[in-house]
Length: 203
Image (tube, rainbow, N blue to C red; front, side, top):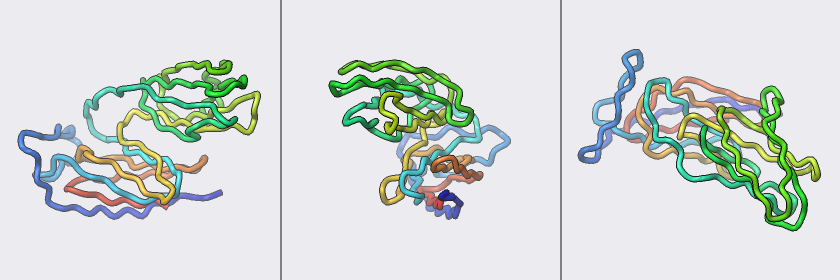
């Protein structure tokens, strides 16, 4: 099994704040952001295809998720095979071929069934995940069809690209838990995000 580990380098530069824009301050028990740093560009390197997220360790009201996400069934594959969505965001599972499919979703950590619905040719089914977590998606009819959905409470969540790169623009400075996982292997640590740019590496 491929294992992840952290090598973290935080590069802090002096930031020039846009006029009139100020970030909300963290709650008292957390270290406040550096003076003059209103938002931080977080860039990093991880294993290709790894899920990466920043979970704030301070009180902040992030805007609710907007728009609907889509997972297609085409060519007897789920497309995309990996997806990130926000808690409370609708995901539409749809079939784009003249083949009967179904969508079975189970919570990854304990195999708790979420739902199991048929998707007839050109049909669709929408579901809103009420709980954050990692979910396994399969089709009982075509057992090779598999996908993973990460549902998060944080807007700072993504999947590293084919070269392992990831980024989060406009991150509110403060203390975060940096989490990365590939397969069932998850690692995490607390990091301080501040300044104009922060560089993080997960291996």
